[in-house]
Amino acid sequence: MPYKVIGGKATQVSYSSDEVFAKIKHDQIKFIDLQFSSLTGRFHHTTISADTFTTDQMEDGVPKLDGSSIVGFTSIDDSDLVLKPDPNSFSLVPWIPEHKTARLLCDVYWGFDRGRLERDPRGIAQKAEVYTKTQGFDHSNWGPEVEFFVFDKIHWDVLTPYKGQSYSIESKEAPWSLEGTGYPMGLQEGYYPSTPSDTLTPFRNECVDVLNEQFGILCDNHHHEVATAGQCEIDIRYDLLTNAADATQTYKYVIRNIAKKYGQVATMMPKPISMDSGSGMHTNVSLWKKNSNLFFDENEKDELSQLGRYFCGGILNHAQALTAICNPTTNSYHRLVPGYEAPAYIAWSGSNRSAIVRVPQHFKGQKYSFLKRLEFRAPDPSSNPYLVFPAVLAAGLDGVKKKIEPGDQVHEDIFKMTRSERKKKGIETLPANLGEALDEIESDRKFLLPIFTNNVLDKIIELERRDQREIAIRPHPHEFYLYFDV
Image 1: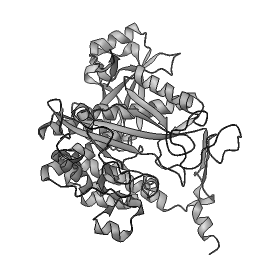
Image 2: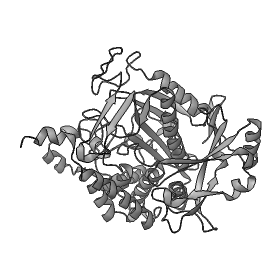
Image 3: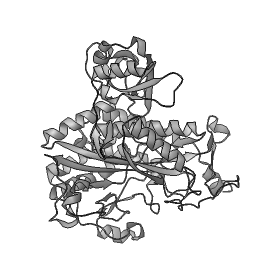
Image 4: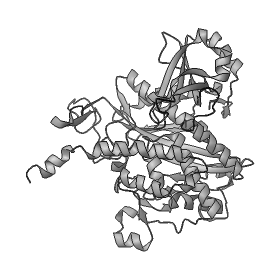
């Protein structure tokens, strides 16, 4: 990131510090948004005047961050942090035309020359890229498929839990819509409908245009997804690990802001609508060396190399622990249930979407060797991509190191198997809730330690346990339906 299409070919563009300052002057930029992500993946920013932005600040950082006010960063007694801009992330922010604004993604450092903040998630992604090279590979490629919902309105009442809690969703696409002006979609009937049923085509067109033209994030496809009420997907072109994580965070940022422009609201919640499909972030990965995709072997079944099999074996072996990072919210586990094309069972296959890992079967042969990849279907968009990609990489490389075989492929619909049939094939289940996922990562974290520190993992577990407790102590509205007359 960023990229431009030149002569029909995607070409990576890089900016030096001098080029950034030249663009600021040429484009008459007034303000600079310094952006960074918290440990939980929330996007933050502080805005500085372009007139006072200096080359020293670009080189040494901007001392404008209280780490104790960012979830997961620091304690109040040691909280002075520095934001160091990445010149290659420079881009215009198109929805602030009256006060021309650009953005720069930042790395987070301790003040007083104390080095990188180890809980800066972007630093963890960069550390993962270094680790990849130490294992004998040039790089890994990542292609996230981020799904999301766009609602007309959303209401919730949770601030006084002792009197009751509720939420409601409004969408002209939904079968419960009372507007009477649209073509409602039934539950799980939203995949690839044409206009006018798909009301969000203009919205997605604008999102793609902004991502491509303003942020240099190339998108090659967009469409309505399976769920009703405005579920969408925009496909991001594959990229290196940190670049792909940058693109994913920017993607969420763009989608939310363009939705606001349209008078709507976008959410990355994995399962906002009961009894309908949830939103995933299927994560595609491959390993490369000397411009060669090491997952491709045309002499093997499905053209997946032995290295790719071992990588798959590592993901399957650590899948239960990975859910704590790839599915970090209590809401995540409403999605990971049978019947909605979301994985619930630990198995791998080719085109079988009931498996947690797929080897996509669209094309074959050397011509398409660059597309050979593993698709890990468990992650969802509530997760932090700066943590998800390194965690999946760590699991896969552990499989490569230990030569973990993934076992036989499962070609049947796992959702239709009986418990005894799954047991016979050795198919295990993903954690049923966030608490179980955290128990798994507590007992299976060693594979993460080449990239993550125990300090980081302990903080992740602490924050997610807190959320789990918040939900556990509150009655659910559906409990009144089930139990009020007991």
